[in-house]
Image (tube, rainbow, N blue to C red; front, side, top):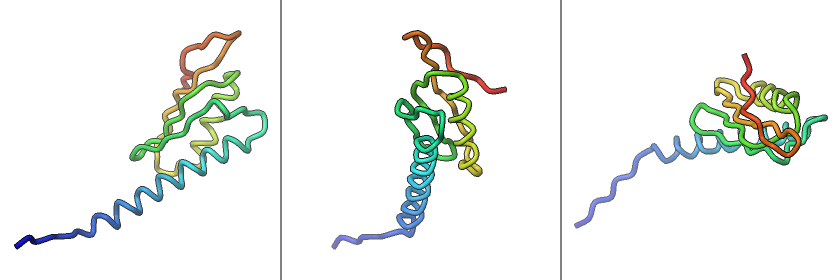
Length: 98
């Protein structure tokens, strides 16, 4: 005889996955809709309580703008800005806000 047990964790996990997906989509949409920001080189991921921005932009102003938009939507999540700035075909170090 085989006994199968189910838990209610699946429902909680589904809700958390939906929240992560919703936050990721909201940040990506905000970046794509922002004036003066080419978000085509930015990847948005949500891992736990972190919103992670990866990729490349053309200026420091764009990198800062992307981080600001993500922070506005992140709520309790922390934004990790790993966007690199392209400079004359080269890639610089990540922009650190402080």
